[in-house]
Image 1 (cartoon, helix red, strand yellow):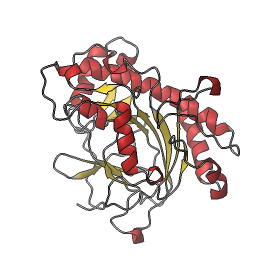
Image 2 (cartoon, helix red, strand yellow):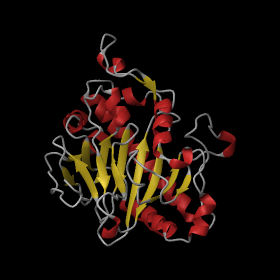
Image 3 (cartoon, helix red, strand yellow):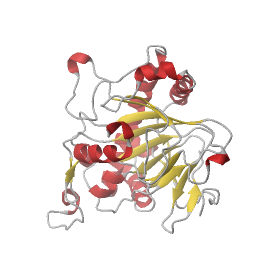
Length: 320
């Protein structure tokens, strides 16, 4: 099926789940059961009651569009660092070895450290880079980051409960996480670029959990278990979250990390806000911690930090 032959959203495959009662503690178990069911399906979920204020989203979206519309000579002042912070221009990312480079730009940041408290002990963690020509971007970005991080942690508690684990199971080593956020800008994709050009080609996400705030343009497509593609358009007052590869590996495949891609042929520019939630780099990803010491996993245990370094090395040209 080409990217032009895509089915409509099937809400049975990507359900809408209200997590209010998980976040406020009034009924976390019922919400956790819904999250568990969705995560063992395609692992994509529309989340209501996410707790990120609309004005926080709008402020960052406005700042993001201003940044990407700026002259390249300005953006290059904050070009991507070896710590994966800053501006990544067109051609900087490729999700498959044989695919064309993704038709997108990104601006990336992570936890904000004061220099005297900087934790710089991993290749994907370090100081953020903020554009001097746009001083309000930092404030908007960090405010959103903190809300999205809180949402991700609530969801990780829900996933743990859904697996009959202690609620903090996935958060035991999250005091200095590798989580990072990105503004991702997709220009309109002209048809002359061909059917093999994507905003982001088919891929699964690298880490534990992805929190995705779409705009109104749409373009996200998800692959079902039959190999068919279908649209996952924005739904008002929701944010999409999806299981990523490390959470799937941690649960021995019980939670699914599903291929998805982006095609922006809307005639409009598209901006997404992404939080990739990952724990501390030393966190051991080992299904035996969930299923017992006698469980036979298909893959060897690996630390979160080592896995992400390997995946980033494959995906981003600047790291080569």
